[in-house]
Image (cartoon, rainbow, N blue to C red):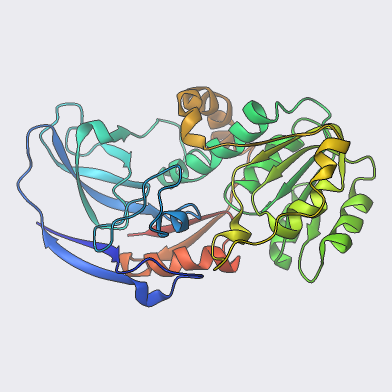
Length: 332
C-alpha cells in the first residue's frame, strides 16, 4: 500500500516558505507483529511544530530533514496485527502529515467515547484543550472570582481558556486581532481587546479600562507586546501560565524581553512555563470534567478546516497569520 507524506528539506530562518515542504510517496512494508495501519481522516497542525523545524532540540527533538513529519492525527485502523486494535477502531496517534500511518500499537490510543465529532479529540478535547485546562487549573491554580486575562484568546487553546475562566465568575478579558475573533469573544461574554496597531503602553491602557482592578491570572500564548502590557496590569499575588510565545516563533534573531519584568517583583507575581505533555497523566481528569460540557454544548469551540493532505503546509503557515478561528485542522 502507498502512503503519501510531507517532509521539510531545510531548517528555515524566519517564517517558513511554502517551498520548504515536499510531498512524497512510499510503499509501506508488510505489517510486523504488534503494528497497525491507519487511514488518517483528520490531521492537526500546531504552533509548537515551528520549534521542531529549527534543527535545535528544545523540550522535544527537532524534525529530521527529508523524513516524514509528525503531528497529532485521527484515523481508522484498516489493517492490524495488534489484538488491542481490531480493524475499524477509531484511534488517535502522532503519525500525522500523511494519509496512511503505520505504527506500533503502543503508539496508538483508541478515541474516548463521548458523543462529539471525532476531530474534537484533536482540539477542544485533545492537546489544545488539555493545555488550556492545565494552565488554569494546575499552573495558576485559578480560583472562583479571579480576574483572568488570556492572549491568543480566539485560538485553539485560548478559546477554551476564556470559557473555563468565565465559569469561575470573575472578569475575563481576551486579547485577539481580527474583528470576527473579537466578535466571537464578545458573543461568549468575554471582554475582547484588540492588540493590533497598539504598542505596549496603548494596550496597557485598554486592558486597564477593561478590568480596572487588575488581573489575578494571565494565560500567555503570545509574548511580545501582549506580555509587556499584561505585566503592567497584574494584581498583587498574580499568577502567569506561559504555554507559548507565538510572536517569537519566526524571529530571525532573539528579541529583547519586556522592559518591565520588575512588575513581577512589584506585584509579587509567579510566572511559570509549562509543557502539557509533562502533565498528561491528568488527561483523564481533564476529560472527565470537560468532556460532558463539550458533549452537552455547554462549552463552545471553533474549527478552521483545510481540505486535503496537500493543504497541510498551508494550514500550518496560516497559524502565523492569525487566519484560524479555534483549532486548525486538515480533513482528508
